[in-house]
Image (tube, rainbow, N blue to C red; front, side, top):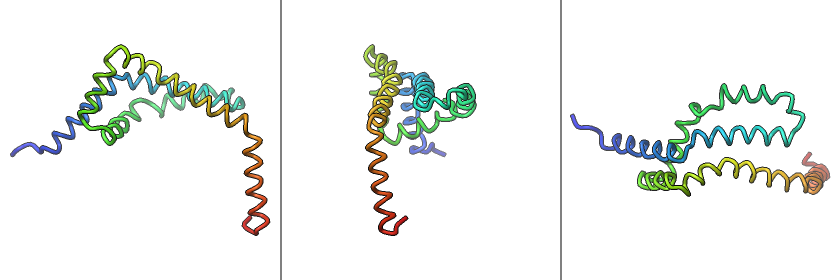
Length: 143
C-alpha cells in the first residue's frame, strides 16, 4: 500500500509552518503579547487592577501556547504556501528577522495603545454620534 501523497504534502506543509514559528520565536512572541495585552487592558480600565493576578492566573491556565499552537500552524498554512513558510523561516533566522521577532510583540502593544489613545481623546464625539443615532431611532419609533 502506498503512502497518501496529499497527507505527506500536508505534513510537509505543517512542518514548514512549525519551522517558521520556531524561527520567529512565536511562543515567546505570544507570551509577550499576552502579557502586554493584559497590561494594556488594566491601563485602559484601572478598575481591573485589583484583579490583575486573577486575570494573569486565568490566562496562565487557559490562554497558553499549547492551547493556541495548532491554530497558529493551521492559520499560517492557510495563508502561506509551504515554500513561503520556509522563506519566512529563513528570514527569521537572519539578524534582521530575529530583531523583527523580538520587537513584534512590543510594537503590537504600543500600536494598540495608540489606537486606544485616539479613541479615548475623541470619546466625546463617539458619544455624540451614538446619542444622535439613538435619538434618531427613538424619534422614528425604532427604539
